[in-house]
Image (cartoon, rainbow, N blue to C red; front, side):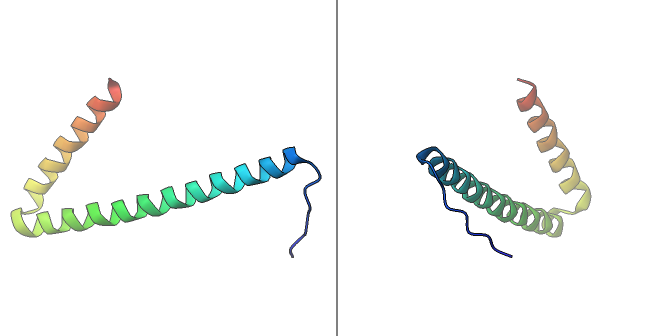
Amino acid sequence: MLWEIKPETEEEILAVNDLLLKMREEKQRQELIQTCTKAISLHVSKTVDKIGLEETKRIIREINRELREKTED
């Protein structure tokens, strides 16, 4: 069911526009996260094929450690 609500004031128009922009930005951000997740997963898979699971795990643990250190700063 769709409702048609017409803004009554300029403040309402600005609020609706702001909400739409935020929704669109969040959608773009989620799409970017999904794209990056797929790219990282693909690279990890290729790395496992090239150098093996154990070495790949070691590399990922090191990257994880570096990321934790960056967030602690």
